[in-house]
Amino acid sequence: MTNATMAENVLTRIDGAELGRLVLTLPDVTATTAETVEAVIDAANVGRVKVTFRKFRKRHHRTSLLFWLAESAERV
Image (cartoon, rainbow, N blue to C red):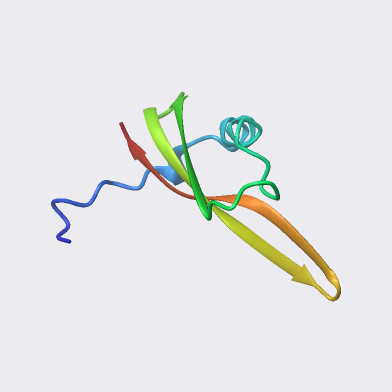
């Protein structure tokens, strides 16, 4: 894929509070088999964007946490 066809990743320009509210609308990470999910939001600084979240597992000794991690965002 060339740079001309790749969409600009605007994830760093989206406010963290907006991403936090968006995560609350996603399906339960432990109940879904999907590795990625997408959601659309009207971000204040960027406009309408599609955010891609990836399932992420953090291990600490015998404990394992599973959560959605914002991976990228592109304008819609």
